[in-house]
Image 1 (cartoon, rainbow, N blue to C red):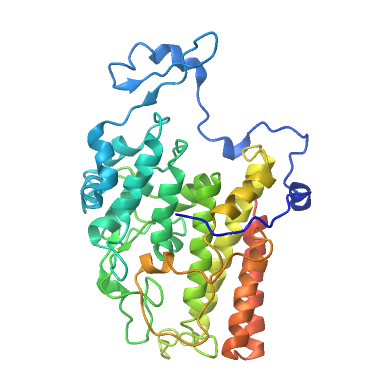
Image 2 (image 1 turned 90 degrees about the vertical axis):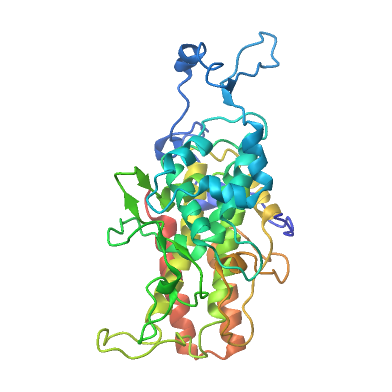
Length: 408
């Protein structure tokens, strides 16, 4: 359960200070972030078939006893999956050829779910894709299930209550989600990369990323299969999740935990301990890939803040101070790297579940401050050469600001 943060943020002037308040003072949603708004005029047309489709139609409590939007009532067999992770994995695993992706879509994709149904679906997603326990790597079936969830939810508006469970899934696969650059990986054989691809080559380079656990299957979220109508667009999914304060807190926690995990595995010079000089990449140095990785961390945190600002401008977030308080109440706390270099390679689920060292200090929504506080403390404790520490700080600053102000 998410929590542990103290409510120390002030909401006074937050929107104005960020330049995120609506220009005309209205709170009407619009733009790209008004995706898939409900078509109210269709309600009467479908009313005659909703019962036959197994859809519940609750009545409003108003004086006119007006019929609300139809919602999907989850059957008991589906609800049971929330308490059975193995069965949930089997239900969401689309197979190597994605032949069962359609079944996953039927299970997860609903515009509105009755009662607590959306949260139940979120628990199913979390259980199906989560590793079995501490120290356990993700299996191929769990990794395929994670791909199927992202592909099924592509270009859909999530029903209220589903976002936290999906965010927990992405937190479990932070390193894999970070590789999705929006381009199709046609050379990939499928949605999951085998664990062998996590091993370094003779030059110490690993295509899937650095410091990976042995024996873990990795989700290739960027894989696209047009024939199977499979496109797991992580950028779109994160944009959807960022509207929910609990999901926002989960994703933000995952990025900050990953930063602490990453820094404590670098050398005392701020470099990759597995680097080997290569004739194939003569310009590469021990800091080349760490620089790229740290830029990406800053970019993803900046992107979360960008969505927060955009949703405030278009009215999706109607009360920014309340949104920020909710995020802070749900964040787990502060993550700090060890004061010495570590050579362990924990699975991704353990990175997401990294213990906190205390409550968040300072303005949680100043992502740059939160990143720099961790980086500067690490550099001081590890006696990182000042020139290298300044360079790392600057490159993270550049990519954070770039992501924050990049037009949507």
